[in-house]
Image (cartoon, rainbow, N blue to C red; front, side, top):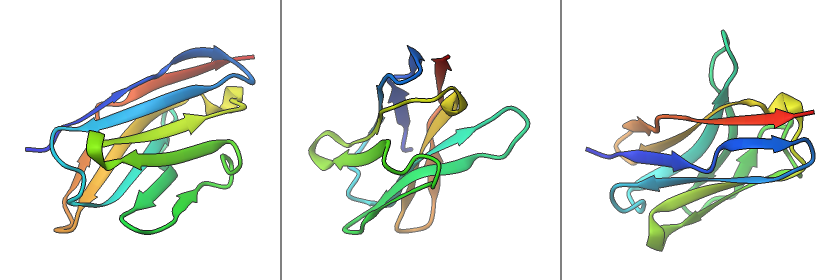
Length: 116
């Protein structure tokens, strides 16, 4: 069973930075897709950034130019570097990973709070 463990959330002031990490219990080579989502209260999860095996990264328009997703295969970890944070970035952030079989796994979520 694959487990995704997120870390790096917290409270920062607007304009600050955070880096989220998502470490998988096994190799991430088997994941064709890894991404970060966020969920506002009462809303569906929305894709923030995604990276595929050998493909380009994709970003939601609201975070383009501020967030960067990357993966370190040797550490089985995917990162989300978040810069120039805004109060509207406040949310619970979830890591997701999809295997080539189509099975998707989710992390437990990490709270990101941006104060104005």
